[in-house]
Image (cartoon, rainbow, N blue to C red; front, side, top):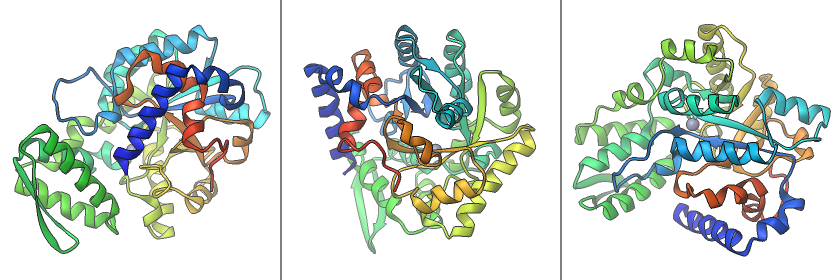
Length: 352
Ligand SMILES: [Zn+2]
């Protein structure tokens, strides 16, 4: 399914670019602005097996996007200002907002210097367990385990399955199968159990993954002091909120925020839902975020911001800067809104 979706997006983006249809669609689907979603920002790596590559862009691509936006007179604003412009119905100028999820150290080392070149603000959504150094980034642990193994075993649906991981193509296929299976498991503890077992079998230090990649509280303190940086909440444990009982989902949002506020000594007003797609955040989560007092909450559903988004401030869509499509020709397609409009079947709001 993921591959299918990726192919549709690729074909769609290519078709839009080559037909130049995004220029025709623009007046209808460009919206009033866009919230861009990023994860890692770091130099490209050579490894053939990079199944999480969609979650990272190179600093040059970020710079190209900022140059593109500035050349078109598009304002680059904070999430506070997104909320304010929507509330005041101030759509005189188009806007873009940059958001980075999870709290990776490369955000400080590679994104911040580029954002500084453009004096552009951005929001980093921090998962408090990641900052503690105790979080589980299972999708990366899975990548590390498969990268070093020539075969992996998993018990899928009560049957022990052995997957070949001896070549880059086999590793890719195994990753997709296991990733899909893990996301479908009923509870967070099931994912933890399976990943811990896999890591133990293949000698992967699962807890080191978090410390290697994520900023600690001590690193976040000076980072958050930068005038361009805003810190948002991204729950305590990075769980799939929709799969939790209501009290737990609410606790994840509010206690994750409280930990950041206490340690970084600043109010946290904005939230990003972990995973953020329809199976991780829906109507109940949107209501919980509103009840918890967040000014805005962002999903990973693709879409531009429209005036009607003012009525759905805790279900805001984003435009992914996807590492698989780091081609400068794609920039005008992404800012036109045509790509996300195609993906949404030309609906402007998807907040149910
Ligand atoms: Zn995340």
